[in-house]
Length: 292
Image (cartoon, rainbow, N blue to C red; front, side):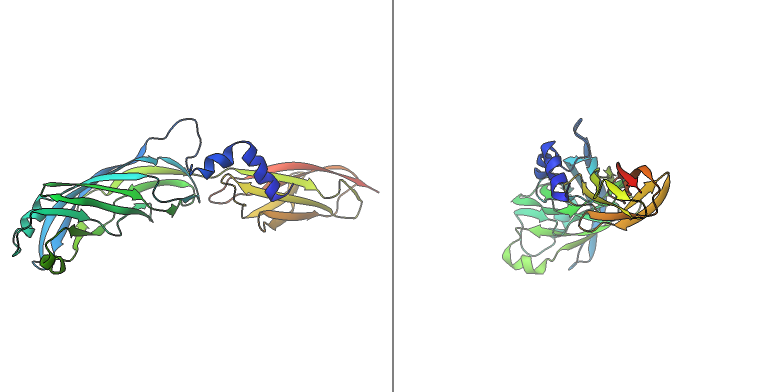
């Protein structure tokens, strides 16, 4: 069976349909709980006055699951993010500027959380311009990213970010650049945990000839696809009597193994895909008859 045929087989199980709708959750038995909920206090500085002020930030992403598939391309815009900035101190700083401010918004351009060390962008994270308030309600979405290799990772707030005041009077807009904000000493940046699971794999393997003459190698073709429908990468090996007798790297999800020095009789050759950091191993046995 070719790689495309294996993909069709996966589609018949309904797996491909689930993945096409953006399903990145590992398993479908029950919805996973929220991966992100928490906050920390940052020190933000108004550059023209060089005065720091404490700004507590909290974020939550209820739709971001705690179990996801490894090496999965997550589309942006699927997971909403909500948050709050306590900006009373910033309002006090801005009150020192020469023009009165009657309304304000807040933007966090380029803001990213961290999944381990992997940046996860939060697109459009900002508070709409409105009447002055001690609390700025933030809203945005998780941007596109690729999940890392299998493992358990902390979700963390960044060590620093820029805070942009929105809706300032025209003359002040150029005068007030973004506030650089840095997490305060002693603050815990961890706001959640995500478990990244290896994708399962489907393999088809068959002998190119079911019967071979003694002294001639038996050739076995293998095709491997991952749970997300993409072709697998890595190595496949042939095992006979518990010993590895051939190996080859997959090319476009396929490999043909040549097994030589077979004695007469029916031979059971186990073809095993070894897997990697993002995809689990899988194996299948094929039979070859060796005749004189």
